[in-house]
Image (cartoon, rainbow, N blue to C red; front, side, top):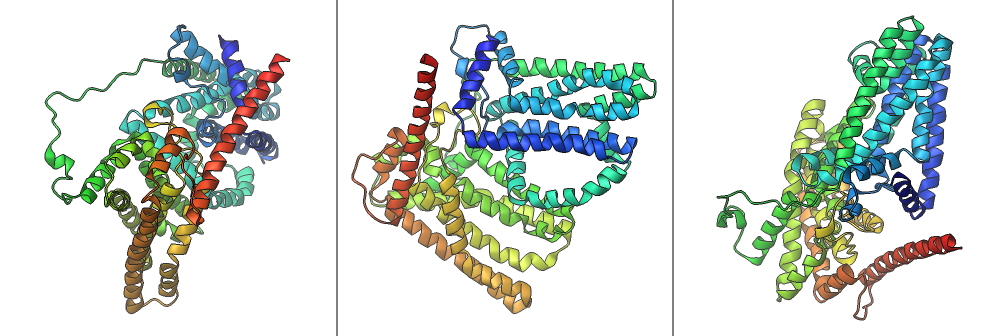
Amino acid sequence: MDRILISLKFTLLRNSSKGLRIVGWVVGAALVAATWLSAAIASGDQVRGSVLTLTFAGWVVGAAIGPVLMSGSGALRPDYFALLPIDRRALGRGLLVSTFVGIGSAYVLLAFASAAVHALLLDPASLVIVVVGAPLTWVFAITISRLVYGLLGAAMRSKIGVEIAGIQFGLMFAAIFTGWMVVQAAVESIPALVRDGLPAGPITAVLDAFPSSWPVLAVERAALGDWTGAALLLAGLAAVDALLVLATIAALTPRENVVARRRSGHRRSARLVDGGGLLPATQLGAVIGKEYRQWTRDPWRSLEVRSGVWTGIAIGFFALVSGDYSELAAFSGLIVAFMMSLAALNLYGQDGSAVWQTIVGQDATTIRSDVRGRQWAVVLVFLPHALLITVLFILITQHFWVVPAVVAALPALFGVGSGAALITSAVGVSPGVDPRRRVGPNDANGNVSLHVWVVMILTAIGVIPTAVVVVWALVAPSAAVSVVAVAVGVLNGWLVAWLYGRIAIGYLADRMPDVYSRIRYGQVFRGQKTGVLDWLATTTLKGEQQMLARRQKERQDTISARAK
C-alpha cells in the first residue's frame, strides 16, 4: 500500500504547476547551500552551534508551513480513501510514509546533515552522532509537516482549530506583505550572527530546548567526551519522533463523518434570529443577520476573519521588531480593513449552490437588500477587530500622532473595501468546492488571483481623496486639518461604498441566474451582454474553463504516456 500511495503522490505532483515546482526546487537548493555555508563560516565553535540551532529551528518551521504555502500540492488527504475497504491504520501509515519521498523532503535531510561540519571541526569521532541525529531530526520535521497539514482539515471542525489555522495564514500573508522588514533586519544581523552568535538568554534557552537542536547539542557533548549525555539526547529525540508518528498516523486515519447534534434543551430564539432586536424587521435586516451569523459560524468564513486579524497582528509585530519601521505598527488596524476586502471578494462563490434561494425568492428589492446587507455585515464583523488592534499598537508604540490619520483612513477603507469586494463577488464568482464537500481550508475559493488584483485596484482608486487629506494631515498637522481629514474619510467611505454597491446591484439585477449557472455548471447558458463588467466576468469564466481544460489534457497525456 505504501508504494501505491507514493505513486499517487507523484501523480498529484505531475498534475500541479510545473513552474511552481521548479521555483521550489531552486529556492530549496539555495536554502540548503546557505545552511551549510553558515556552518562553515561561523567564527567559532560556540557561534557555530548557535547558528545551527537557529537554522534547524527555521527548517522545522518552514516544513510546518510549507504545505500551507503550496496549498498541499502533492499531499494525499485521508478523505480520498474514506470509503475504501482497506485497513485504516495501514492507510494512515502509508499517507505518512508518502511524505518522506520527494525532493523537498531530501532538501530537509541535506540541511540537517550540515551538523557534520560542526562535528568535523569539534571532533571527527562525533560524526557518528550526525549519522544518527540527522535522520531523527528529519523524521521530526517531516512528521510535523504532515501532522500540521492533516490537522488543517480537522481544524475546520472546531473553533480552536480555525484559530490555529488563522494564525498560520496570518503569518503567511504578513510574510508576503511585509516580510521584507524582517528579512532586512535578518540580513543586517547575519554578519553579527556568524561572528558573535546568539546572545545568552531566553532565546538561546528556547532554541536549546527545541528537539531540532538536540543533535547539535549531542555532537558538542560527544566532542567533550560525554557520550552518555549525547546518547540520551538522541534517545529523547527518538522518543519524540515515535510519539509524533503515532499522533500523525491517528490524525491521518479516515473516520466516518459524525453529524453534530444540537444540545438538548437549546432552542433557537426569535431574538437570536433577528439580531437581538437590533436589526430592522426588513429584507435588509434579514440579510445582515444571516450574513453576520455566517461570518461567525461558517468555518471557512471564520477562517477568513481570523486570518485577517492575525495578519494585522503579525504585521504590527514585524514592524516592532524591525526597529527602523516601528512607527508602521500603529497602522496595523488598517491591514485588517484591507484584509476584509480580500476575505469578501468571493462571497457568492463561497455560498455555493445555495445562491438559488435568492433567485427563487427574488422580487424588486431582493438584490439591493442582498448587496447592502452583505456590505453591512462584513464591516460589522471586521470593524471591532480593526479598532482593537489599532488601539493596542498605538498604546504599545506611543505614537499618538497617527490617531487622526488612522481615524480618517479606517472608515474610508472599510467603505471602499466592502463595495469593491461586492463588485468582484458578483462579477467574478468562482465557486471552488461546494460547501457540503469542503474539507481543507483552501476549498472555499476557486481561482481568485484576478479577483485580488481587481479589489486592490478598485480600493486604491476609491480611497484617493482620503489618502490626499491624510498626507496633508501628516505633513502639516493641526486640529483643523485633522477634523477635515476625518470628515473626508467618513464621507469618502460612505459615498464609494454606495457607488460600488450600486454598480454591483445594477450588474446582478438580471444576472443572478447566470451567477448560479457559473457556480453549479461552470458556464453561462444565456447570451452575454457587453460592457466592462461583462468583459471581466467573461474573462474570469474563460480563465477557469481553460484551467480546467488544461488539467484534463495533462491527465489524458499522462494516461496516454503510461499506456504506451
